[in-house]
Structure formats: C-alpha cells, structure tokens
Amino acid sequence: MSAAPLRQAALLALLTPAALLGGAYIGQYVFNLYPCEMCWWQRYPHFAALALGLVGMVRPSRPVVALAALAILASGLIGAYHAGVEYGWWEGLTACTAKATAGAADPMAAIWDAPIVRCDDVQWSLLGISLAGFNFLISTASAGLILRLLGRGARP
Image 1: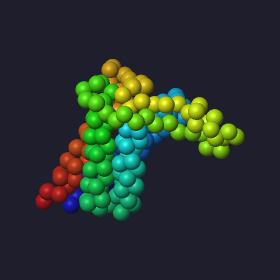
Image 2: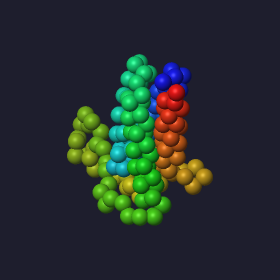
Image 3: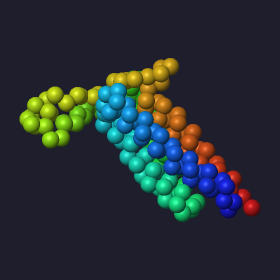
C-alpha cells in the first residue's frame, strides 16, 4: 500500500474526532450548550476514533485506520438519528439527562440546579442544521473520505 494515502487517512481519522470533540467541549464549557443523552452517545465513538487515529498516526496500519473510520461513521449515524428526533421526524428517548456539579457543598442542591437537557430540543443551529445534524454531515463525509483514501492506497 502506498504510504501517502494511508498517512492522509490516518491524519483525517485523528483530526476529525479531535475537532468534533473539541467543538462539543467548547460548546459545553464556553457557550453552556449542555449535552443530552444522545449527544453523549455521539461522543463515545469519537473517543474510540481519536485513540485509533492516534495509533494510526504513530504506527500506520490500514485496519486500525479503517476501524477509526467506522467509529466516526457510527457517531455520524447516531447524529442522524438524534437530528431526526430533534426535527420531529421520529420519536426518540423519553429520558432526559442532567449532570450535577462535582464537589458541591450541597449535593442535593447541585442535583436540583443542574440543567435538564431534552434530546428533542435543538439548543443551537445554523441554517436550520443542528449540532447533531452537523455531526452527521461532517462525520459521514469524513468516514467516506478516509475509506476512499484507504481504498486508493490498496490498489496495485
């Protein structure tokens, strides 16, 4: 396999989850866009993809980078489901989530004061596309490009 497409694919497999997770945490801690349960579901595959992408950069391996691409794709598909719930295309979960502040003087007050975030509420959108929708668009496009780069490098 040619080294250039594999390195490009590994770099994209590292940068995509890093950028999307970075954006999610900036939204959470800078702009108070608290994650709902399905937001967290989208983050978990990106954590795996980030680790796999790092391994793929340090020791380039087609199977490792392909697994990173599949993890990115999984996050994107969860994002598509979440966006559908937000847009009312189908019904989602009935559970809402809230995180209490760790180390609070009054733990019960921290629980009561924690923001409740519903999975069907759009907290932020641009041009009618929610954050879950952007995750779908960016993640699926990135996963497709990574897999295409891996395919290009596999040809004799």
